[in-house]
Length: 113
Image 1 (tube, rainbow, N blue to C red):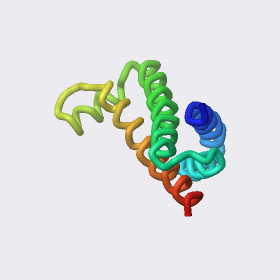
Image 2: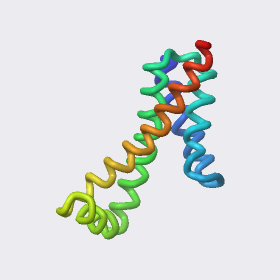
Image 3: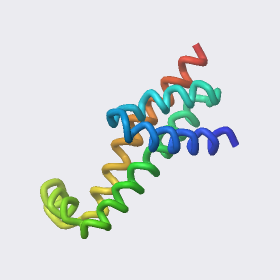
Image 4: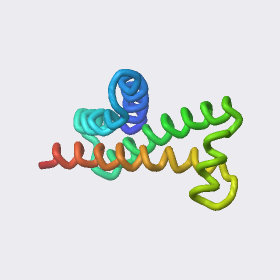
């Protein structure tokens, strides 16, 4: 139950704060939430990763869908040598998820110390 609450808290706080602060605010948010929710480090990594993956991949999907995949088509050709716009959405979520996952894990390990 704490894991789901932590994921939802990370999503909500990050979505609000990303409107006013730089993109990397996801790391302090995940760090603080996982520290305060007293998660063990594997669950803290999962909470940070899933929270930001859902937020960033969902946001990227809706923005990409609304502009007819213009940018993701061009970037997928650059990265994958073929048109795969869904892979760019997936990559966006994974990159943000890894940043927040490691920050959440650091928060949990700090509490353990």
